[in-house]
Length: 352
Image (tube, rainbow, N blue to C red; front, side, top):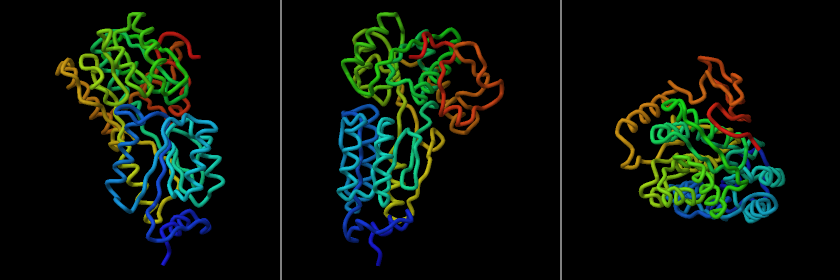
């Protein structure tokens, strides 16, 4: 009778080194870029981890390490998991990609999964959500509740640029003169720096804040200054009057599905990129201050996106410099979205 780890190795077409006893639980490791807290990117990943525990009980054993941004620290933690018999390891930050790829190459009998990256191998899968779909929707809310938005952004990578552009397009679809300003802070998590950037944007007179960072600092800044915010993750508890809505990730079903595959011995590498239609993305409940007509318009657009009747980047898509990136009536392919390196019309300032 093959053991569970034997099945994993067989599914990967690999040897049996390190196979565990059949009665041992599958050990699953999660690497987080920031603290779990009670909101934000990492919190939403941890909800997925907890869903795995609930779904499989004593058939699995999960562990996580917080505040691992990338580089040598990430490689050390991922290697530690691999060396300690973990059969499935998730890296949840773009900055974990290269360290995970290096470790995966050295542990071919382990299943590795990386969120938001592009490096894939026989035992390294990649997964992401089409967060730009929900960003478009919260942008619509921002556009109907104000005339300008200030964005506290992490790194100028395609994932973040897609989000900035999608929010701007959503806002301008309901408010054609809407403008967006961006402050780049080169980190996913630094509450002090996030707050400083948010205050700087508010000092410039923006009406609504948004962010690509993991703490509630931007929401708290909006609350303290009497402005609005569309958040990353439901952070309404930090902004009783400021929090309008938020984009919300739903990682749990994916984590459960991939865990089941490892347990069944059917896991194989994959490139997963899903959004609202697959219930991997949604938006948070609207604040009481959001008028019903705004809610109705946004939810109608959400339904269109989920039914593939509307694409946030469908043409005409015009860049900040006036060039047409997607002609009228056309839909951009995934390669263009994954390599996005420009601002759309309505975003002020230049890329770093």
